[in-house]
Amino acid sequence: MDETTTPAPPAEEAKTHESWRPDEDVDPRSIEQEAGEPLIGDIVDAIRTVFDPEIPINIYDLGLIYAIDSRKDGSIKIEMTLTAPGCPVAEDIPIWVRDAVVKVDGSTTVDVEIIWDPPWDPGMMTDYAKIELGMY
Image (tube, rainbow, N blue to C red; front, side, top):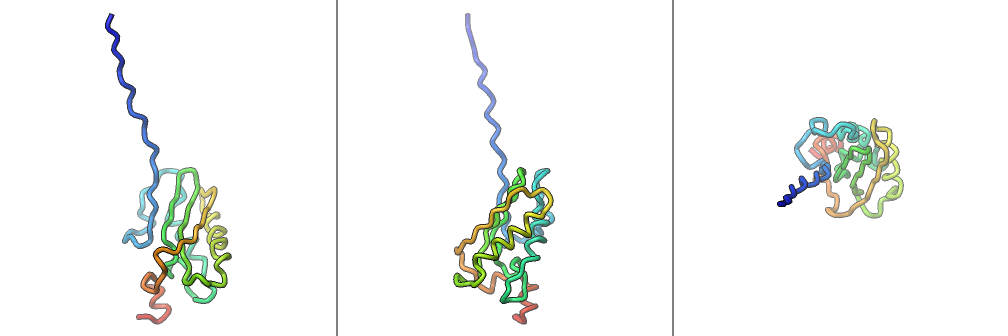
């Protein structure tokens, strides 16, 4: 009696959502996402309500947001920097970002991480921020 076994189909790999980076020339509202993921465009809108207290520009347009990762379970991870390591509100800004983003539909948890590489420089600002600050 010849017994043959059919190999099991390969296990389906878990889909991971790549982080979105503001330096990509992609409108955050045009990103295709899985159903249930908090929308990157909505997250960006929430971040734009947070302002650097020393500069009258929101932190998104200042170029302080390096990556946004939105997952189907509603978790959101944001990597950001500050204009300077000695920023007097360095401990507060991540909390302000978290508090703004947690209000986005579908979000469950928000993790905001401060990173220093690459260091921030004025060239990271959007054209809007540069115009508002008279840099053009």
